[in-house]
Length: 173
Image 1 (spheres, rainbow, N blue to C red):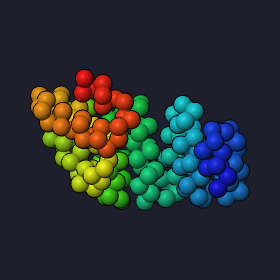
Image 2 (image 1 turned 135 degrees about the vertical axis):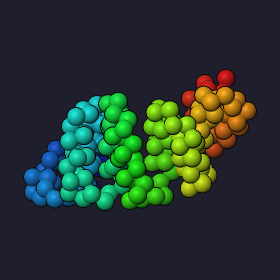
Image 3 (image 1 turned 180 degrees about the horizontal axis):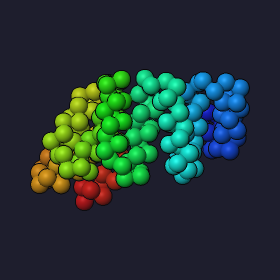
Image 4 (image 1 turned 180 degrees about the vertical axis):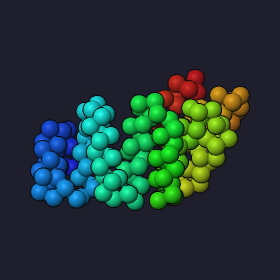
């Protein structure tokens, strides 16, 4: 749709205007709220994004991506328990997202639940063995828990998959 095209070219204000128009005509499409929430995130308007994600979930409570998006907002706000709950819900709805497992692993790591974090990174890699970010985050966890050799192996694998993932080089150095 045109709102997504505006977003893609970086014209966020026109994208928001298009989603506002969609919502004014028919307030039922959850995707309109989710997409507008994503644009608000791009603009740094976290509270507006959260409101849109909440509305999208109210309308369509079985959209994996919206829970993952809202979890990201909760993480940014420091609400790790709420982020964890949303990632858990996203996994129940759509259990084949390496992205969601990796991000839930990050929340577990932040909460000190290292075994759960490791299990989530491992699951993400099983789902998508080419997802460099999962290896990168698992490497960070291994380094944090004193397993430098496994961290190095994960960093190397992440670089093999995605050589332009700059943070991996910094961690590996």
